[in-house]
Amino acid sequence: MTSPTVLVTGAAGRVAGQLLAGLDDVRLRLLDRRRPEEPSGAQVLVGELTDRDLLARAVDGVDAVVHLAGEPNPDADWADLEAPNVDGFVALLGAAQEHGVRRVVYASSVHAMGRYEAEGRYPIDPTWAPAPCCPYGATKAFDEAIAGVFAHRHGVSTIGLRLGATEPEPFAARQLPGWLGPADLRQLVLRAIEADVRTGMYSAVSANSGGRWSLGTARADLGYQPVLDSADWADRVEDDGAGLTTCRHP
Ligand SMILES: NC(=O)c1ccc[n+]([C@@H]2O[C@H](COP(=O)([O-])OP(=O)(O)OC[C@H]3O[C@@H](n4cnc5c(N)ncnc54)[C@H](O)[C@@H]3O)[C@@H](O)[C@H]2O)c1
Image 1 (cartoon, rainbow, N blue to C red):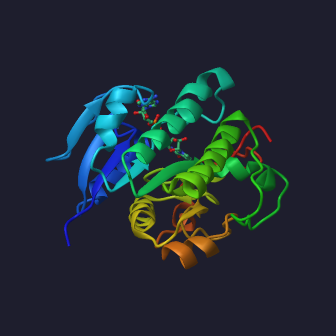
Image 2 (cartoon, helix red, strand yellow; image 1 turned 45 degrees about the vertical axis):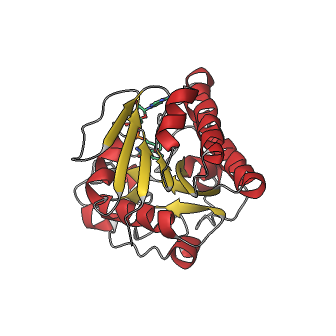
């Protein structure tokens, strides 16, 4: 079987940096407004997500998209979120539809469900209604809704991964329940590219002791088998004492 061709957007970013090294078995195409470091053999496109011509070239002939481009700051104002997190994603989905892309895996966030965490309702079941805790989380909840529309009406299979704190290692106590380590990130994205699922949203965290985000559907639907546990770093992280929820503005 030939390797799938996968477009990774936001390829110069922090999450992509942890992901790309593990995508050995795929042919990569990379898009970002900043020039990313190029894994050998990858095609690179530099520009804006809302540039239709660029997007058309980016998605042409790809089997799947891993969409990471966006504003990742949970404290960002709406004015800074709307273009990258809303307009850019809608443009990408439109291009994916026009060019017959089979699967779009996109970065949502635990902030799309952050109110449950603030209210202490654990474990958070990914099938519950979205409950964002901040404008950033609301953009992710919108992305999940519009991704479902494209799957339902336009035949683009969409899988949202509600990423937790995606770091090589957790460095603050607040991150422990929702940490996603690099090996689990890579496994989850690869499973999401291949899974026999039309559309859905999944918790994307490691198998953290005392975790708050249910992994039941990720295990059942995607075959995700996380291998990392933030408890292994618990005695080394900063005690940030911030009420220990992911979102600092419940
Ligand atoms: N880092 C985390 O812990 C975390 C947690 C939850 C969700 N996420 C989500 O994962 C995704 C990636 O996050 P990250 O931490 O790597 O962010 P990042 O800022 O490090 O990387 C995002 C990349 O997207 C690019 N980009 C942004 N807007 C663009 C546009 N309009 N056109 C082209 N390129 C654009 C930026 O240049 C940047 O390189 C984001 O959607 C973020 O919301 C991240």
